[in-house]
Length: 177
Length: 203
Image (cartoon, rainbow over all chains, first blue to last red; front, side):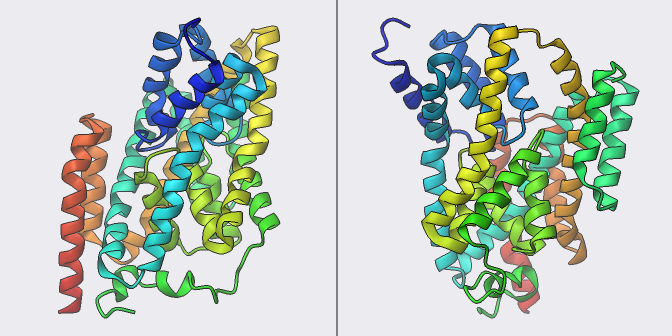
């Protein structure tokens, strides 16, 4: 947008602020990223956003990489760096101080109780997001079968999970899924 | 150690003390996180648990659960939070930065190259088809991690924990209630039952 003083500043402000409200990880912030990048700042078109999302899922690494790619398409490598640091920095700092506080008060009663109480919630949430992702990714019987086999192998054996991802990718490439 | 902590969250205080035998150095932290990140197609959590708990044994299954749960409920990308919390626990701020750089640096380079290729060639259909196959397997891996993280709860027959876990799964995954409302109810409930359970263990 022409009214913005600098695209880098806009990236830093947008993602720095967004990260502080992204409870539950980068993927839960995807709708908000879409709103900011497509509707508010017009950095990307709808289709470009969908492609950027696909590339971020395809590259290895944390899901937060979608922010790197949005930054890259706005302002090149500098934009990629600025957006990534803005998205990760403030909350990483917060996590650092909170965990240090909890570690120091390990023997105190409440921090230990709160941390233990969050465990079942966290696992339940992950199971739920697994189900939600599965509903979009597993559209055929073969797809469901791949998911079940991968889950069983990863749970019961010590086979490197990379093989399962590779097999899934090959089947997708061949057009079977 | 306080008298009320034993069976419920036992190993944490001892194992995270500075005298623990396994102390990764800065380079080791950077490399470990770079490796799990570069293997992490469709999410790094699978690889983070495998590397930290199963291969390097830097944390017990219980410690990993508690550290991840904390990072899960703090705002921001949770694996990024985990890398900083984990690295700084062993090597202070420098350790946190080393783990963070390992996690984000190498995949950032790869993603940027992919984006440049995409900008040049634009045809993403083959990529997308392949991705669909990878995604199916990746969801399977996620379910396997969920099962593995449930094992400590199953082993100590934590019935209330398992009921809360199932309730959150149903509310978010099946009924699709909004996250904030579910957490607003579930967090106080879980804390209350944890307190009650510990009292009963003590009695």
